[in-house]
Length: 113
Length: 117
Image (tube, rainbow over all chains, first blue to last red; front, side, top):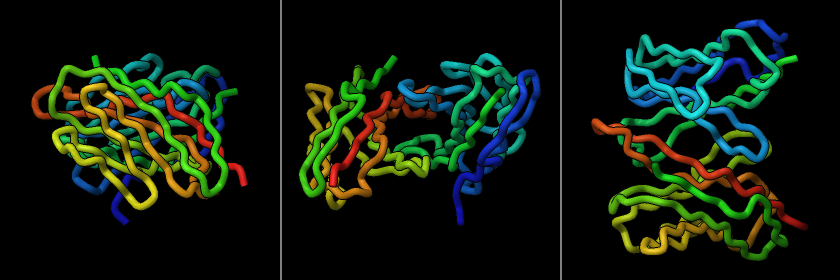
């Protein structure tokens, strides 16, 4: 089925470890983004991309890195995990107009111990 | 920058009753889009309803409808005949222009809806 595929669904990391959250979409969407969701904080934008080779920072970019080498993939890298990065992470995509909203991945629950 | 405010962190409703979730936004644009998303315990984000600002008619999707007051910059969601499956976090979102023909959504902080049997 067409959509946004996020992996893994769950992950436990130790402080200082690095990892990459994967996000892929097969709808040829130009726009892709990463959010983190924390209780009482809603969805906060980490990084986004309006097309291959173009990325930009969102509201909470520190400690995260992204790249967009293809239209389909938009991985999120945690450089040195910290307990403050314990959260649920969502990838979302849309056509550039976003007039029908986003298609979201199923989320990744990350725990940093 | 556009902001989206959901003033009710939590709400509850009796099964079969009607509940209204509030959302206000700040914008200087005249043409824009608004959305409500539902996030059940499964964590999946589901688009519930969408409203185009230039359309005067309020959007409806089965038991879900909106009360769109453009002048007041208000976009509330009404759920009729509430069901246990409606229990979820609900997010209001506004489409924001990034420039060069690209847009993104700005989300409110959400309202957690409980349905009482």
